[in-house]
Image 1 (cartoon, helix red, strand yellow):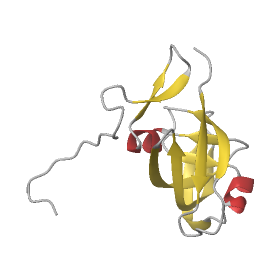
Image 2: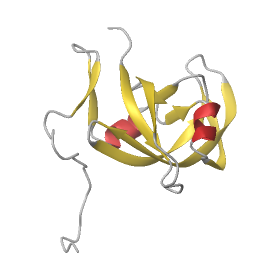
Image 3: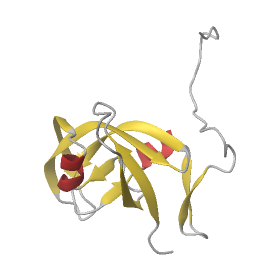
Image 4: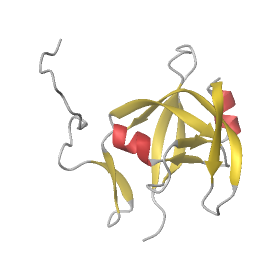
Length: 133
């Protein structure tokens, strides 16, 4: 199948004076979180919120900074998330992809909006009380 990449815009919603940055990211449905290299965290002035223990694909465990918040935008969809500072490239994991209702299209080797809800991201939630404000 090969690797799938997506061009994202990342910004720090706590620092509106900072310009968003455009990055090429590896879309990895086997990873959970957004991962950013240290230089991206520094450019966006992301603050460390806590440490997270991370298990990498090769089974190695390490303690990494968890920073945020980060606004992630892709083709008109966006979400707010935290990021693990790790590696030398941006990695788009399953949590932000699910939050933006994005899917990986193996045939196109691209990230696309969910074909079942192409205009507005769909979220699934259980609602016991139907009174919305």
